[in-house]
Amino acid sequence: MNEFSLIQKYFEKLTPDRDDVELGVGDDCALLIPPSNHAVAVSIDTLVEGIHFFKGVEPEALGHKSLAVGLSDLAAMGAKPAWFTLALTLPEVDENWIKGFSKGLAALANEHDIQLVGGDTTEGPLTISIQVHGFVDQAKAMRRSNAKLGDMIYVSGYLGDAGAALQQQLQQLNDDELNSEDIRYLYQRLERPTPRVIMGQELLGLASSAIDISDGLLVDLEHVLDKSGVGARLNLDNLPLSKTLKKINHKVAQALALHSGDDYELCFIVPPQHYAEIEKRFKGQVTRIGMITDDDGLYYIDDDDNLIELTGIGYEHFAR
Amino acid sequence: MNEFSLIQKYFEKLTPDRDDVELGVGDDCALLIPPSNHAVAVSIDTLVEGIHFFKGVEPEALGHKSLAVGLSDLAAMGAKPAWFTLALTLPEVDENWIKGFSKGLAALANEHDIQLVGGDTTEGPLTISIQVHGFVDQAKAMRRSNAKLGDMIYVSGYLGDAGAALQQQLQQLNDDELNSEDIRYLYQRLERPTPRVIMGQELLGLASSAIDISDGLLVDLEHVLDKSGVGARLNLDNLPLSKTLKKINHKVAQALALHSGDDYELCFIVPPQHYAEIEKRFKGQVTRIGMITDDDGLYYIDDDDNLIELTGIGYEHFAR
Image (cartoon, rainbow over all chains, first blue to last red; front, side, top):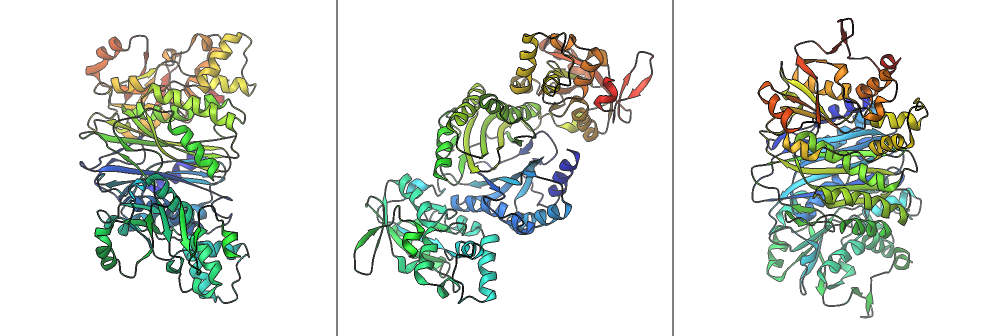
């Protein structure tokens, strides 16, 4: 396994050198010094070839995305990134692949001042597990369980773009209206998501709950509703759609915004006293899409003023 | 992936409920409260089916071993176990398998008061990554870089048993002298290694350096020598062999003790002022096998008083 441990060394030098790392890669354990008066937020995610990404995906984009997924979890808790570990299982040592992968990984790590402190590189089917560590004031951390009746529901950025890219790749998207720039934009959104790390930290003290949209708005928002014991009503006309998604069939675009994952935008819950501050501070970056209710589940109001339950409605139902 | 997230919930309840876990499994991140005045020691390890274990290995033993590997890294640093995360990739949801795996994992977790605080369960080829977290006084932590000229080299327990089990499984061990109890003992050592967690903590302040023997004594000890910029001489007659290993060809047993991995015993380095204390405190549990020198590499003295370099000598060379 010497070749594999060389890889580890190769990665090590690419990420920031933080003062709170007493001992990094290269011993039995890393030794880390967390700040006092903060909780350490940790999250681990795995990407498997053929399940989470297609075989042959550009390694630089994959390096970016592998870390972005974890950073997005830190963002959803409002935590400031600090350290990560990488468990990398590779079918073979392909230097070009490693170079590309580590380049994408390191660029994002440097942007967020997060240091690689340990890892394990083994032989096997291509699988990437990254654990991220960040710091957050535990009293302010945006837990899923804090949503309350009367709170407003917001999302960052645009929804459905990553899902549209996936549909396009599977040749299931009617893309007659899209030009090559649109297609590039959608793929960028799927393959190089932007974790909302800064926004997550800025939301601390303003938003009570947050989640990142990895599995789709409905599925992810339902985790918040379940944990908080509340319901919600969404205004579907307010779902934020990119210029590109506005060019495709509107029902399909809405369905993608509701159901498709991989956007890594934040969905967050704001209590009444902080509406004004949120609208001012994040003008143009966030959209109010609904409110927390005491309904049993997740609803929207259709064009005929009927209350329709969204819970359990799949993509196909909605997009037909 | 609902079936997969159910698994996560299933695992969650099996491990201890620690006071320093502010928020465990079930949110974007776990929130952990490390003690002040201690470093957090972290290590991540991956086990892949067909590489690190045979297809069809007993799931309970695999659950045990997956966590034991990480605990052994904490032991080698002298850290006290606290939390772990589990990234589990499964080809299918087989309830019996999960039950066995989680049983083995939970039994060891409870023994060491280490809590499962997060994870990710995904579909794909069977791969297990576990990250362990523990606490250690960073001034006392047994780093690989601390070995000095004149220090003594010790190991815990017996060496070569796990390697012998593997050779037996591959039908490459002459086991004519072994009875069924011997064979059971060897497999126990391979499949259910005992991480030396308590000993690791007790060595703090006495041993300057330590490493766990996962890849073989020579390979692992060389990491210490490299990091410390020293050499070593071993007394091969002192290599601790179990009753079982004493029954097989002596040269083969010595070669296994030097070269085979998976024993998860500790190899540690003791400065002169602590010899007596070590010999007294760990009587019968540890064996002095050599000393740190200013040689360039790793040597032993053969029966004719020649100094023979061990570095780079493989198993086959030695066992012939």
